[in-house]
Amino acid sequence: MLKALVITPNEKTVEFGSLLAVARAEACRREHVSMNPPILALSFIPELKVYVAIYEVDDQQKPEVRKHVG
Image 1: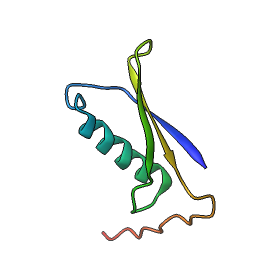
Image 2 (image 1 turned 90 degrees about the vertical axis):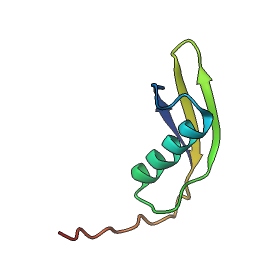
Image 3 (image 1 turned 30 degrees about the horizontal axis):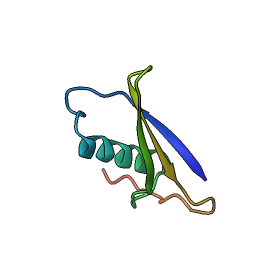
């Protein structure tokens, strides 16, 4: 299944590597997994001044259960 993220650039996310790192981290957080989902596309939309990252997740992928240790 394909999913998308919208990334609003700031002074810390001006380089392609930084944008890719943000996309990977946010995709992991959204999907509750420890492995980075593959980022298939990262495009700038100049009319909106945002980047859109497309990533892929497995439909049958089970989320990682995280236990809170406190």
